[in-house]
Image (cartoon, rainbow, N blue to C red):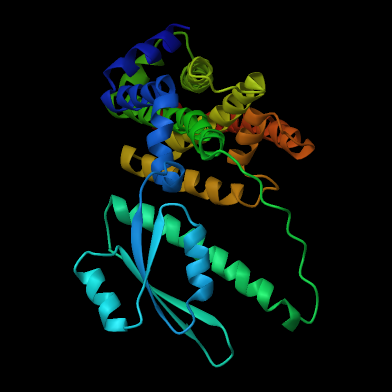
Length: 345
């Protein structure tokens, strides 16, 4: 416990870690306010109220004009002359130009000219994307008689709030996963610095064994993530974000933190210096993220389902799997400590 307290006190001098925690605290504390700004980037159309003029020119404009007229915030200006349409775009009279043509097989092609950057461009791209998707759907329906077999049935669209989707699929996983990754980086730096400064050798003079020291550091850093998760979930609740299974989410964070910190501990014990330790840790985390895409359900999706209360059997089984992997990481640390000669550290 003395080593654990020493480890936690030393975190106050790590400005990068303190800043990262402060940023997460700010996001969690003001989530209801910040989510509006985040959604403006994630789904700018959710804000509404912005009218944009676009020019339409080309051979077959009816379908495109019909779809654009149904899109809120998008005004269409029809041009019969291509040069005139692009001239108004260059002069700033319209925000974009949509030019339509038909190929030899009767497919509708749309070329879009839009500004390269800017806040208005971000909003424009979203609105044009929805317009073009509507045109694509209309074209598919109109050409359905050409299909040799019936396509799969598509469920009807339902109206959903972009704020709810952003909160549970992006904000909540972000706040819960970042503490685990930060904890892994902390334990790597802590163990490597103990070796480089010679303080690890001083700790060996005490009755503590190398295994005791490593266990204390692992416990101190792995406990940070679930403690932060409790705080973030409480602040989200204060901001009106309801979480269906908070205990399960805290357990998920604890399991991932134990897994990540265990991985970082093994890396710190076998890597020769700090640079290589952080490199190996980063590569291992990236590899783990790639492997996670092969799972039946991505961890971020599991967090979203647990938060919304729509967890499936797969979600609960994966939660058990993460717990088993965390325990396995702890035993991997113990096995590594037994194989390492303390005199070589």
